[in-house]
Structure formats: C-alpha cells, structure tokens
Length: 450
Ligand SMILES: Cc1ncc(COP(=O)(O)O)c(C=O)c1O
Image 1 (cartoon, helix red, strand yellow):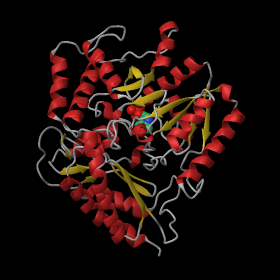
Image 2 (spheres, rainbow, N blue to C red):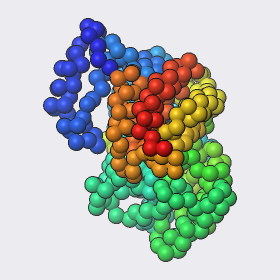
Image 3 (cartoon, rainbow, N blue to C red):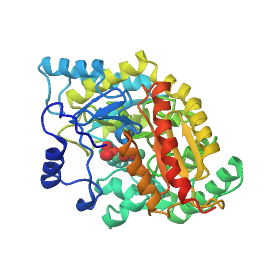
Image 4 (spheres, rainbow, N blue to C red):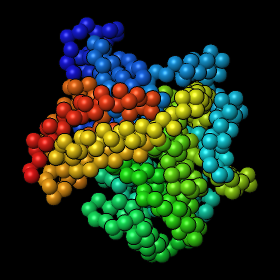
C-alpha cells in the first residue's frame, strides 16, 4: 500500500505514524513491532490513507462499524445532538436521548429485557452485567468459557478464556473457566445432539463441584467472535439455559461483537430462541461512531433494584451523544433492513468461500453466520492448522502483508482470518474482497506440506 500520490489534506502518513508511535501506546502489542495503518478518512466500506489510497474494510474495524463508515444519517444525528445544546449532563438526570434509547432497546430486545444500564463500551457492559448478577443472586462465582474474549478491563479480562488473559493474571477473583462448546483440539461428539449432551453433562459436573449455590451466572459469547467465529450448535442455547435455570444460575449473553445484525438476527442469541437474563452490548449499538455500551436486564432482575441499591456507576453513564448516535444507528438498521441484509448475504459469502476452498488446498474450513465469517488455513492434508494455538506461521504473516499491500483490511490471527464487512456491503464489493483473498491464498497454498 505504498503511494507517491500527494496527501489529500493534513498530516502525511509518515508524520502521522511517527507521532502516533512516539507519543501513544498501541494495544496488545510490543511497540517496536507496531505498524499502524494511517487513515485520514472513511466512507461506506472504504478507508483512505492521507495520500488517498483506498482500503476495503473486510472486518468493520473491530467487527463494529456495522452500518458502514461515515453514514450521513448517523453523522447528522450526532451533529444535531451537539446543536441541541445537550452533550453531557450527569447520569442522575433524565434526558430525551436516554429516554428514547431505553424505550427503543426494550422494543428491540425479545421477552422481558426491558431495562438498560449504559456504559462506555463492551468491557464495562460485562463488568456491570457481572455486578448485577452478583447483587441479584447474592452469589459470587461466574462461569466462563475458554476460547472467549470479554474485554480488556480487570474483571472482563478475567472472564476471558484466551491467551490475552495470561499476562493480566492474577485478576478479579471468582471466575471458573470451563471448556466451552468448541474445545480447541477435541470434540464432545460427532453430531450436535451428542456434542450438546456431553458438553452439558460435563458442565453440570463442574457446577456440582463448585456448588451451584455459589454460582451467580455463566457468561458466554452468543457466537464466539475473535476466537474463530464459532456459532453454537442448534439447540445448545436452549439446553444450556434450562440447565442453568435448574440451578438458579443466570445466563449473561455477551453480544458485544455478535449483536446488532452481525449474524443476520438483531441479537445473536435469537438464533437459539432464548431470552438470557442479562445481555452485554456495545460496538454495533452505535456502530462505534461514539463510544457506548449497555447491559440489558430482564424485568424480575430490574424489579429487584426498585427496592435495593444498584452499587455501580460511571461518569459517562447514559451519555447523550452516545444515546443519540445509537438511536440513529438503530433507525438506519431498520430503514436499510440491515439485519435482513446480513442474513441474505450469508449464502453469497458462503458461495464465495466454497469457490476458494475448491481452488485452494490450504483452506482447512470456512464458515459465516450472517456477515460474521472466518476462513481457517491448514498445514497438511491431515488438517493440522498451519499455526499452533496462540502462534504464527511465516505464510500467515505474508498473507497479512499481502492483504495490506493490496488494500484489504481484515484480521489475520493464528491459523485463520476474518470476513466481517459492514452490513451495508454490496455483492460487488464482497467479490472485490474475495478476489484479493483468492490471490493471497497462493501464499498459503505454497506453504502447504501435502
Ligand atoms: C465478545 C466481546 N465482549 C467484550 C468486548 C470488549 O469490548 P470493548 O473493547 O468495547 O470494551 C469485546 C471486544 O472485542 C468482545 O468481542
């Protein structure tokens, strides 16, 4: 992605990168390996460097810009909120954006999820969902799964079940990790029914061992995100909810990444036909134009706090600008039928992935639920992943560099890479992205050991 084109305006790429590297700390990274992508502006499914080079966004940034970049209606709503003279007031106030967003989310969420606590982002939503579960049940322990990510704050990090937790230990107490629906290197069974039954038998054993009366909640990603885009087998969510209900354990669905249309349903747990007790949301809620997260709360739990203090708060709770942005995003999602659009584009993505799998021997497997997809790369015909757990492979590094040099933005991690474009993407733009992937996969094919 080099260019000798004149910069469009403001800082050039080199100056921007140098200053950002010198004075700002990059996340999850050894700083001397960071090569930030210089971005001057964005539009629809594209980002532009200061020199005007165009990059196709095949990951909606951190799987969050669901309505696409720079949507005029969302931008106008944010400007209108600023012009209305109400940007920030303290969280003990009542404001129109807060009133309207609470009511809107209550209408959108199924069942009796009728009350919302607004945060700044996903990790804070997870923190507060856990706090609510503990206060409501009077129990302390939280079950969470390996192969999960729940956020970078102390408690959310401890809920997390993947390597980013390791360096952050010891973290918040009270978490018990279980092997989730998708163990990394073995399977609970050959078909969905066996997988669900065996997994839940194991889970109940853990619950018995821990003492059900000590467990407040289990937190799961409704569809596992960063750790590979793994939707649960059909019937799992219902069976899990029934098991937890039997023990008085609440279910917290983390919809931070999978929510707001990404999977072809407004909320991903709707695929499983359940109503969780608590829901953590962020990212797609405002399409990340402005920071905002939320915890959705079922009526009986909300009712409890009529008579009991909610021992939680944030300076930016129910921020007017965030609430206004979320309302505009939800309107755009409805007007442009983006949830339906994600569902309709799923077969298009799967067909493109199938074509690639026909042609490229290094593809191990692929999947997409709505516009939430991943392609895994294998090392050999035995199906071994090209990179080990939490590791890399030179061919994957080259593939990532190829995507970048050819104007495709997506995440390459371990032995897989993501296909999570904005829900506004056209079929033609999808094919534009898959054409770049097609060429890139020659790199991993060359590394295939046979
Ligand atoms: C499933 C899930 N939960 C929580 C979070 C944390 O959200 P945030 O980074 O907004 O704190 C993320 C972020 O990627 C996520 O994917």
